[in-house]
Length: 503
Image (tube, rainbow, N blue to C red; front, side, top):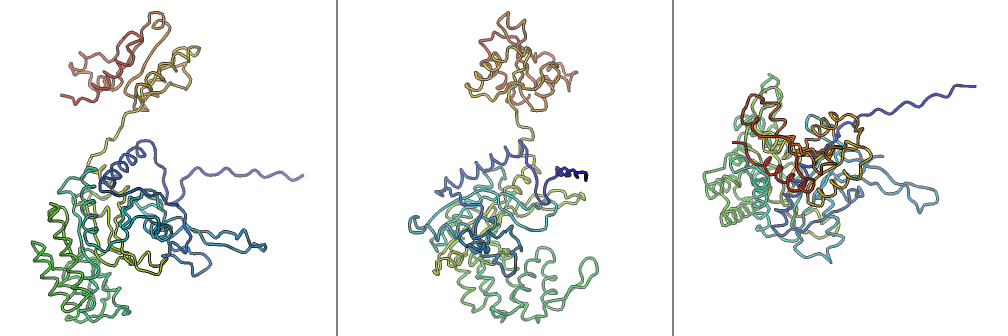
């Protein structure tokens, strides 16, 4: 008889490009989502929670043209339940952002929704891309969009709300900048260069413009014309434009002046007679006036022609929130933290469903990057308090301990009973330490007879252990014996003292 081969055990590893989040990180993210939602709601936006799964047809950006649409999304093909031969059915995919699902929702329910429709949405999105350091296949986004109005007031409002959100979550003025541009101005520059919409060089020019921050004005000119040597000595071929053709791009990239009026004047010179470009400049002027009227200065929101958003569906104003403070990379080099949010106007997205153009503008905040930024600046509580732990001195009296926990919870105090093996009391305190518990409650047989309990201030106890030479800590007791009826009052007193700053 053949020996049955044992099934190998599955490996306990996280899938590539994904990660697990534990209590502290989940709590911090939840608090940030709550804060951001509060700002969005304050601005009059309503919550929307749409499906995490859409048809690939509805997502649109990744329509299948081969056996599997695997370029960027996690997708699968369902069986057609109504086909007796079991032929394949629709392609389905996890959403890759929160904007494409909004377009489907608005097209489906537009007759019941107010117009304009102002919604915010928060949740995970998934991208089937190559993972890298700090780049995961699942991450959280916080979006807010206004659908159904072409007014530049909607675009200005989104930028104001983004500025307010950053300050509300803990990024102070001076540590961030919301930069605003307009794709129409950029299209006007391409027209001034004589590049038609179907000219393949347009994409090359856009990619070159995106390198302005890295290579500067001279580097962009070289890349647009004959090419250049990079820092490693490798030669990079240029787009092949003449110097005169490249001039509008350089005029565009260097058009930012000390004030909005000066920037607009420089942009007009750059776009020449382009109707599209002049229309975009007019829109930027309107946004600038509205921002000034709202009290937002150029240290918060700045019209900056060098910003080029990568997504192709933007049709007008675009914006990007950048954190301007410096951090150190893995090699110890200083660098700016970079972008944490962006968005713009996408008037053509709903048209795919309705056949009619519907104006829309929105923003998306990368929550995980924003959390990472706050950690870099030390603005997140690294070790949030755990629950009060009621220790177990006598297994037969578990009902007494559960009664204490119920009192604490009913009083609004986070608490739990130790549910491990109570034989070793030291292990119970080690458990409380690992949970970062602020207080341990102790009631042994002697305390029960006397009608008292011991309440141990674990945070103060830890400070005493670390700084045994500091007399001010020694003078303060870290364990108290109080009547059983004073449980709630004493726990509240200790918790309040732990929240007071040390002198």
